[in-house]
Length: 250
Image 1 (spheres, one colour):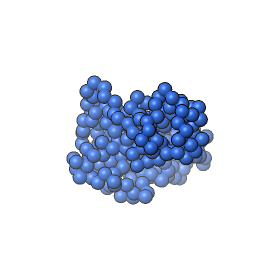
Image 2 (cartoon, one colour):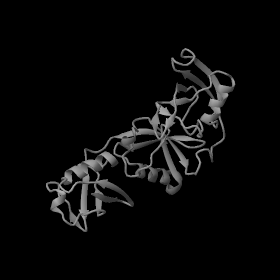
Image 3 (cartoon, rainbow, N blue to C red):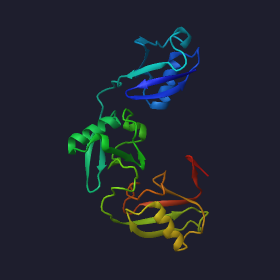
Image 4 (cartoon, rainbow, N blue to C red):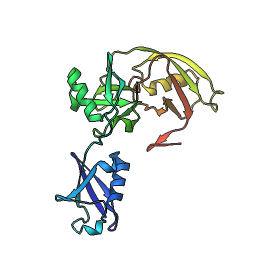
């Protein structure tokens, strides 16, 4: 049967069996949301679902029942601080955060530091947006000296770009393309990946084909700028034959 898990102001569906243990449901939630099982509390109409029981022990749980999920942060030894770098449109500065910092708590710190409205704030790490505010930064791979880009939310990631800067890049093709050529070039950080692709094709540096551009092990989006992807002066961009369809690489 399909039940609805309610956490903070969000809801999501999860499939459970009539004889499925409560602890197994918590395991599914940990896999989907990253919330440790030990910190979860599940309840229906104020009745807590206990780990040692199964769904059949709770006849009030039926199809489309809403199960409330609350959680407490684990209390390990006092968390050590790690330094990160926050990059804004025209500046950057260093900040120390706890290893148990969440996306939401980091946004609050940024708001109190420089006044950026939380509701208009988007955080990006290695080209991916940190969307779930109750997830730990570590779930996204944020670690010591990580660079997090802070942008204002817009409908199109090409809008509201800061003043352009010139970048010196190296485009490295795979062994199946041009015998693994290494191509130095200069461009603007406001250029999109599509612009870069067309430039290389127009100069016949690449043959006509479909290609993936990779930066720091992340597939780059055609309609987004190099700055949006966090590309810096001197970085390498890797080119492989292939396309991306519904999140799958071919």
